[in-house]
Amino acid sequence: MTTGHPPPLGPQAALVCVLAGVAYTLAAGRLRRRGDGWPRRRDATFGTGLALLLWGWCGPLPGGPFTEHSARHLLVGMAAPVLLVLARPLTLTLRTLPPGGPRRTLLRVAHSRPAGWLLLPPLAAVLHIGGTWALYRTGLMSLTHHHPPLDVLVHLHMVAAGLLFGFAVCRLDPVRGPRSLPLRAGTLLLAGAAHAVLAKGLYAAGPPGTKFAAGDLHTGAQLMYYGGDAVELLLAAALAVQWYAATGRRYARAAARAGHGAGPRVQRPQA
Image (cartoon, rainbow, N blue to C red; front, side):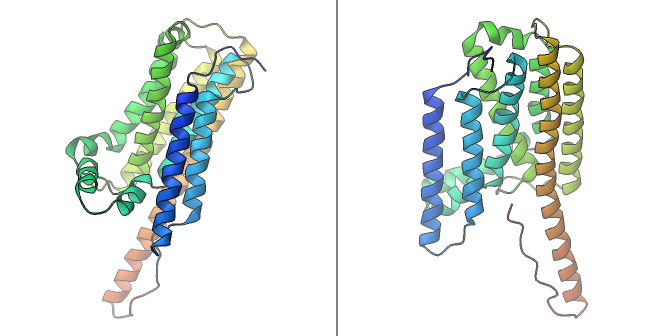
């Protein structure tokens, strides 16, 4: 194993992950004790997301320097944010907070106009995938090797942009404005294509200002290509569940209007 570039974050990041996990577990337990349903698979999804985030921020990763960096990019910027979003942390927080100031403030932020713009799927995709292109196709990655604080900022941007993109595509939590399934699915498709083109380009030529061994560069690019596909399939599955549930509700309403009773019962998606 080669550790060409040290992990960008340390004990502080580990503490944040642990505190987030404890807060989520306590909130979910509180809901269950008062009789509200909260699937335990969401606890597992959130915990797995935090574990991947912690590993990407603080842990050693196998492979050469660029392969190691690609794995960190996948964990921090793609896989962990999607899992955290699928656990519906905003919904859990709103259901746990009592009526009053903090709950009203959180709802006001989630339904604010800036939040609506940031969660517009095409804009979220530009911030997410555009940031990745900027990292690998400008001299930014070379600069991060010489300026550790900049490296930390890049990794914080990765997770923030990944969370924003996950929220915008899945829209499982109560945020401002409905966005249609075709818009979200089309955005996911285009973002996936842009990520795949970037990974293929990195197979042929590394980021400007950097020097990686050819084998390391090829392995890292392949990991980015196939790992990105796996994360995008997970997002596509979340959209497919929503489409299936929405179609079932539409058929049930049509059957009820036609006088065939309430029609088949359709459960809301629980990603």
